[in-house]
Length: 173
Image 1: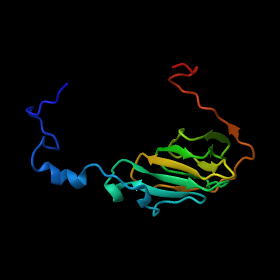
Image 2 (image 1 turned 90 degrees about the vertical axis):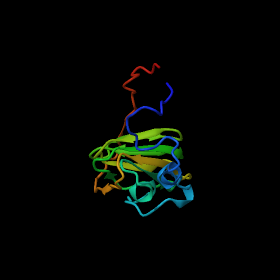
Image 3 (image 1 turned 45 degrees about the vertical axis):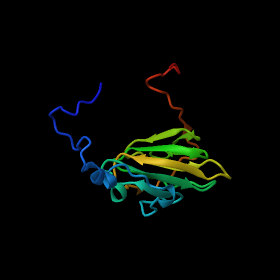
Image 4 (image 1 turned 135 degrees about the vertical axis):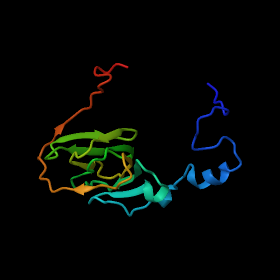
């Protein structure tokens, strides 16, 4: 349906008004160059987090986004992100996730895979490759940079957990 500019309810923007350009010029879309990410963010031993999108950089109110790099054959310390939900997208390499009270569960993800980490879940990211850097994009559900580092004695052999799609539990489409 076409948008009718003559309707009478207010919008936070004007349709084609001469004053739009100056307001949207610096308060509209922002492009943050990949070589200008901010390493001044909550860190966990074993990984390098860099912020691209947050309140301080672009005014984001409800999300945080950036990158995570883990060196070959390295792992992070156990941690959680408080009340925040996290999504990790694997760009390059092989991620092995461990989670649980004693990091007793494990799953792996490769390029193109998404990883969801619920609030307060103790977890650890491991680079499963002995030779390749693990590179990921990370998004969180708030502009806060919460990283609570934990002292956990991990179980020796974690249980592998395969994801079952609740909307297609039998693999159908």
